[in-house]
Length: 259
Image 1 (cartoon, one colour):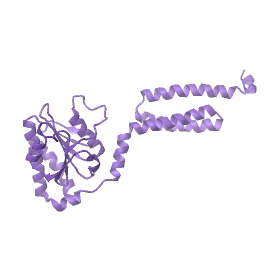
Image 2 (tube, rainbow, N blue to C red):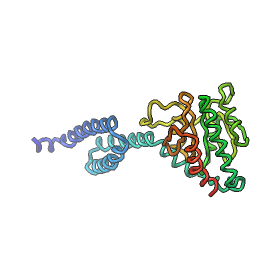
Image 3 (tube, rainbow, N blue to C red):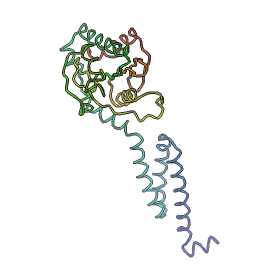
Image 4 (spheres, rainbow, N blue to C red):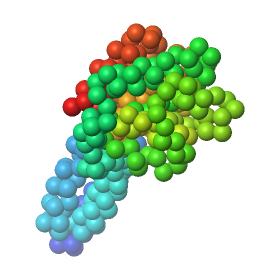
């Protein structure tokens, strides 16, 4: 039987067709069921199989594997788009700490953070939602294309007035750069992390989304509960009281602004 197939020239085309069917089934199962990490593991295996198919003369199999490799590479780009974007953004990282130091000493930085904390709990007491972004080492200019220029001193009164419901710029976030309130009404990228708790609202998701892409610190005041949270590196610390908020701000902001 095998000899007859060899003589007729049908053996390799038959193997080629069976391999194509098996590869289609396996790759579709992989994309449907697997995590991104497992796809990364299978990628070099598919590459090696493609090279082997080409050397063996399995033209259809080699062609199909090349197409699937291209598709999987696109899938990986989509799955890791936020990690890729964060890496690209980090290339434009600017050291703003030095410029802050020339304008603000330790006592003035402490006063700014005190005003920020006072604003957060003033809004919390009134159940007014707020999103306050503090730039640290990485520039946030790319997230400020939409928003209103403010360029004001950071005070509790100004921050609170921005988030009052009748304010035209109460939606979105305020941005604090180099110790000054520079923008208001900015819209932040929402996190795509499916593990984020479903009870978290848009403000918290926006805070997590931004800090997944940049090293900013975000203070969030919940409109529903009045709770105050701090978000950094995609991680959220919730239900802070005034003492713990001030400690967190000093620990996570002062060393960056004064270094």
